[in-house]
Image (cartoon, rainbow, N blue to C red; front, side):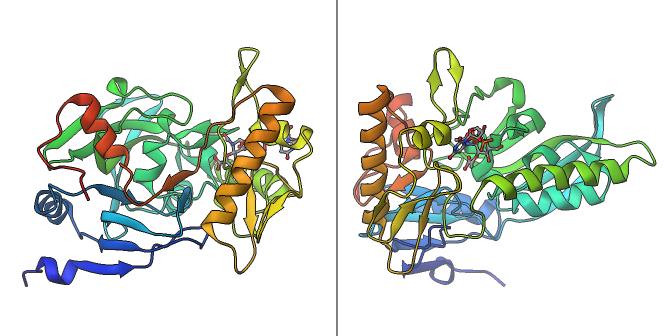
Length: 325
Ligand code: EPU
């Protein structure tokens, strides 16, 4: 059966974000595979395009967002293969499409006795979203487990990018020009008998998060990146805490008492409440410590270019009319 665009596209669609606040997408489409994704990119070549993953790190302004929003949630196939270029630290390649839920992938790989992703336990993300922002924490970053990235350009051309060619850095991949479609992870089969230790390791990572973060409340994880202070990456949460911001609130948004880099929300909260609170925290930290915190949370606003648009402009590859509402 051929699926028409009409069936793929929804107008005035709700966007599933972890904050659970904010406006809708003028146009939302969820392609089932790379071919449909490519067709959509070409059909909307003159519009701005944004990609939604798990919505775990995303804040949509109350006015919603224009252009085309693509959800890759239907692209969620994954499978393990023997590595062709096996080495002691990688004998299995786990191929996962961009829409795969990262916590689930981690759980499944640990259950199968495959090591490499367990340090990312408890990070809410889709595979594609985690790659774009090089998600990570105290126990590692996703870049460390990447073998190859498969992607499309804004204009639907395929890209195959070996890990060595990606400019991974703290919460940064430099892949602004790409729409990730799948990732090959480099994993290691643990020796027979070592499976329980691997499962314990994952439990340990999850327990740390549970003890230090407000996981039961509505939030989108850390809202600011950890700044470099005196040459060292320093916890934004600790700095915000030291500046006395815990408990600050705007409307139904407040700085978590548990971890100061989390903003938690109550029913009735708006995106405006969260944005305003972020500005007040940023201002207090700037005044008290002379540090300007940068957003980790991505904010989508109507009539502003998304990352793909910015990347095209930088690379000088924008086609006429692309990105205009
Ligand atoms: N701390 C405080 N007060 C706070 C928060 C933290 O004093 O309100 C102290 C902690 O006690 C600890 C230190 O600061 O001694 C570091 O805290 P934590 O281990 O929570 O690490 P973080 O640097 O604040 C990073 C990531 C988290 C990730 C954790 C743990 C960023 C911006 N944050 O936080 O990631 O879960 O490490 O691995 O890189 C996220 O990206 O959304 C996120 C939550």
